[in-house]
Amino acid sequence: ETGVTQSPTHLIKTRGQQVTLRCSSQSGHNTVSWYQQALGQGPQFIFQYYREEENGRGNFPPRFSGLQFPNYSSELNVNALELDDSALYLCASSQRTGTSEAFFGQGTRLTVV
Amino acid sequence: EDQVTQSPEALRLQEGESSSLNCSYTVSGLRGLFWYRQDPGKGPEFLFTLYSAGEEKEKERLKATLTKKESFLHITAPKPEDSATYLCAVGAGNMLTFGGGTRLMVKP
Image 1 (cartoon, chains in turn blue, orange):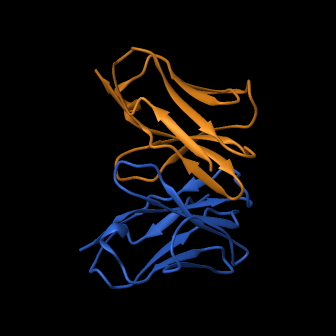
Image 2 (spheres, chains in turn cyan, green):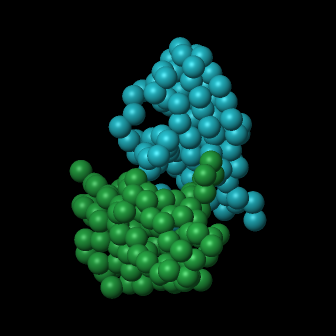
């Protein structure tokens, strides 16, 4: 059984650029959620995808967008990067929607300079 | 608005010194209380889910309990390898709301 994998592990971008982060969900899981974790804080919910549709969104602006593919993998896209977007971005997969047990990847550390 | 508060923010223990971490929450429509362990620079590792008041779960030196307003993570005779940040989250709707975490350091 493969776990949740994210790529890349680290990324440095310039303010104003766009970034795409990728996530492969755990085998047998059809739901993917994305979280942003600033240094020293708990993760914050960005959005969830189920059957290739957005299925809930947190308090993040529209420049944060996502996709889910037929194989349940997912992308997080962030446009017009700001310095405050620097954080650890976490992907979590689960067997169903709602808040069944979610398993996290190792995260992507994004630094905006 | 759902809210989760964890205390203390940081905790230093000697190896073998048992203690408890607290997670207080307010949520409309609780769909689970989750505990995770997070090592520096890594993603959270799932530990427990609790669904109803009075429920308890154990794993090695860890035991999680749940009441209607709070959850405790009890650590019995901790070892240095238990050092990590412990995150509590409540499930409501399709999202998890996390607390700020408790940074645990266990010294040999």
